[in-house]
Length: 390
Image (cartoon, rainbow, N blue to C red; front, top):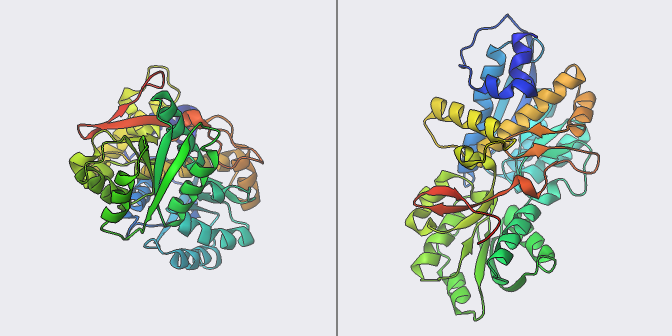
C-alpha cells in the first residue's frame, strides 16, 4: 500500500492525522480543484474560521503525503462574510471559472441555501457544513451535509429534559435561517417528545440587547426550562442577559454554539448551560471502545499542535466534509463529478468527528441521534452528561 493510500484510507486515517504536515512523499500529478465557500469573517466568523483553517491544514497534509492516488488537491477557498448573495456569486465563480470537482461549505444555513440552486444546476457535489434539516429534506441529488440536523438537536434536548422531568419550556430563537428552522423543528417534534412549548421569543442576529424578550420569559409562569435556537454571537448575548436577569431555569443551547469561543463570549454566565454536540469537543472523555475516540483524539491533537487553539465542532464539520469527498473519490477512481456524487451517497460506516456516517438515497446526512452527545459547561469546560439520569 502506498504512502498516499495509508494517509487517506479510512482504516489508517487516525495514524495519518498524527503525521507532521511536512511529511515527504513521491511527486504527485497535477491537482484537482475542490472549492470552499465559508463565512470566515462576519457574524459567523467563529464557525467559518476554524472550517477554513481545517481545510487548509488537512489538504496540505494530504498533498504532502502524495495526494489522492497520486492526484493533489488544489483547494480554492472563498469568504462570503456570511452574506447569502455573496455566497451564491462565489458558488457560480467556482463552477464557471474555477471548474471545481466538488464544493465544501456553506458555513450557515442561509449561505448554504443560496448556493444550492447553483450547484444543483451545474451538477457539482456539494457537502454543506450547516445545520438545518431543510438542506437535505427533501433530498437533493447533489447535496450532502456533515453536521447533525436541527431536528436531531431538538430531539436530543427534549430527551434530556424528560430525564430531568422538565416538560414545559420556552423557546428563544434567532431570526436567521438556522434559528427559524430549529424553532420550527422543535415545535414540530415537541409533542412526540412529551414537551409543551408554552412561550416563544425571538432575537435578531445582530441584536446586542435582548432584555425585553428575556424579561417576558422571566414573567411567564409555569416554565421549567428554556431552549435557545441560534448560532454565532447571539446565543452568548442571550446567555449573559439570562443570568443578569436572574432567571433560574435550566438553559439549553443548540449545537450551533459548540465551540470554546461561545464559553469565552458568555463568560461565567455559561456555567450550567447544556447543549447537544459532537464527540469532538470531549475527545479524552469518551469511553474506551467508543468508535469515534481514535478519530477525534487524532484531530484534536493535530489541530492543537498546529494552531494552539481548542477544537470546535465547526472545524470538525469541515474535516468530515473533506474526508467524505476524499474517500468517495478513492472509491470512484478519481474526481469525476457524477461518480463522486454516487460514491458519497454510498458512504457506509465512515467514522468522522460528527459520528459514524452511513448515507443512502434517502439520507444525505447519514447520522443518527446517538451521534450527538449531551454536554454541560462547568468551570469553562465541557462535561459529558450521563444519559441514564439527570
